[in-house]
Amino acid sequence: MSAKQLTDLSQLCIHTITTKPWGIEEAAKNFSDEGVKGITVWRDALVNRNIRQTGHLLRNHGLEIVSLCRGGFFPAKEKKKREAAIDDNRKAIEEAVELGAPLIVLVCGADPAQPLEDSRKQIRWGIEAIIPDAAAAGVKLAIEPLHPMYADTRSAINTLAQANDMAVQLNSSTVGVAVDVYHLWWDPMLETEIKRCGENDHLFAFHICDWNTPTTDLLLDRGLMGDGAIPVNKIRAWVEATGFNGFYEVEIFSNKYWKEDQAEFLKKIIKAYKENS
Ligand code: ZN
Image (tube, rainbow, N blue to C red; front, side, top):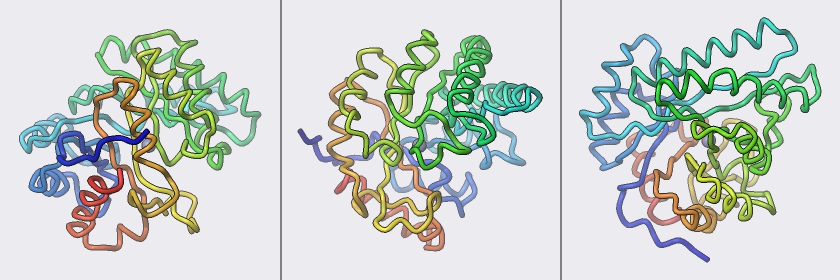
């Protein structure tokens, strides 16, 4: 099964971190000029900005705000730190409201000082604690499973099965999952679990990029679609089979691409989106 080629940009969203050297105003203008339709905003892009006004600015450029990245990082051995994390997630919900973002992506966190099972319990408690705030604000939460190489400090949720299980346990229409091909492409259960997202009506976001071979940096060497090993088109077909018709979000952290002229990089993103996604 393969997905139809993407001939227009109506479902293309780009994360602000993808073109990190640009400030959010510059990114908005350039995305808009090239016909990009969606933007996912990383919280660092909002530092020293009036968030409400920034939201207006993005919409005035014709961009739909797809999500705010990121909340989460719930687990910690010390209770004080767990409470601080919940406060920070409540702050993220307020920021999402000010910005006009309907969704917060959760990088759930992990503390290497404790077993992964403990971190997972704390993730569940953390999300439970903020569901009422998110629901009252009309903001949804997406659990994003991260590749197991990040299980020490970034996320104790490492497969889509784990994210699906947790979303089902939490049993709230506010909570769903985000599928990021970088984290999940290797999983033999991926097609089955994407189908399960659809059955539970909780596939909230789809992130794309590629896995470089060799990967020279575990965090900052993501590739453009077509650069590496991930069958993005095949995974997109599975996602579309669930009825998902949201944005395809290009999320690339790359020391290599950040060193390039970002206007040229944006052109490459659009080409890779159309030809290799
Ligand atoms: Zn992602």
